[in-house]
Amino acid sequence: QISRELMAMKHATSKIRTFSDIYCGSETNTTLGFRGEALFSLANISENLIVATRTAEESIGEKMEFNSQGFVRAGSLKPIPRKIGTTVAVVKPFESLPVRRADLMKRIKFYRTKMFKLVQGYAIFTTGVRI
Image (cartoon, rainbow, N blue to C red):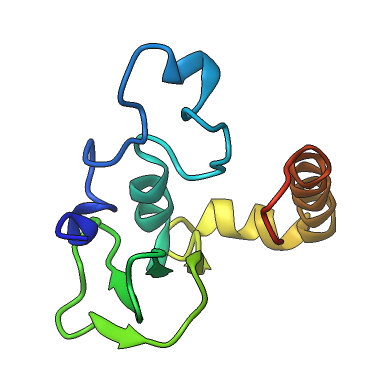
């Protein structure tokens, strides 16, 4: 919980603790969490990255917003009621990259279908994760 404010910083997050995690995942193989610089990359290409999270040890969740450099926006840390788990929202993706944004808007149906197939593929083989 102490390091949550750092989760979208470059080089700051990883669930990899041992070399075997690269090939085997966590000890229980129950995580679909972001690895390495995924959150930084999402923050970097968006206007705003919002993360809401709560662990089993906590009675209330926490919401935080990150700017495009991965820093927590001032005053954005707020306690929120939520179920156990984490939700990541990307606000205005590619807003600072007009050519990428134009391509996304032009081919939105293609990218949407591709994204749904990817998520469905994970959902078929993963138990205990709700999408």
